Length: 114
Length: 113
Image (cartoon, rainbow over all chains, first blue to last red; front, side, top):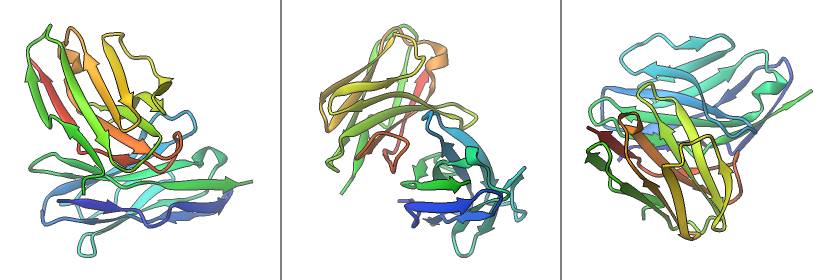
């Protein structure tokens, strides 16, 4: 079974600084997808970024980028120029390309200090 | 040990039918959730219960009715199923109310024909 681990229950960053959230996963599949979701205090989930495992290039969405290390099974999220609105829970997720089973990490709470 | 379990894993049914999805957690958490994930992987919170009481009820058709017989269970009943209900439904639990560390179930893929 695939598992997703977010080893940082909480992280803190100063406004305008950069922060990296860690995510590792365990799989025997070669083709899969990885996601980062954001859950702000409004509680609605926002899809921040996604990565296809067959793509070597790291995905980027504005201030959000990932460091995808396939061999290490690592998928970290980097937030540049952190803003107060980035404060939220961040969930990492894995989905196998063959079975479409999605697995979530338990989340990392990000606090942004003004 | 399965922390958050859902049954069934797959559910294929006809339009107009009524169906239920069950969720159970053995983590001793006080709060449970239902999320709906569409084909584009967008995830939306639908409901949240804390100690068997409804605390989040997002804009969801009233054909969807959550039921929490005890704090370890949160079932989702859907009446008069429609094509647009086809999605993957995830259950999750946490010790405190979201946004908080949450443990997700494996998901139930609902297909309405």
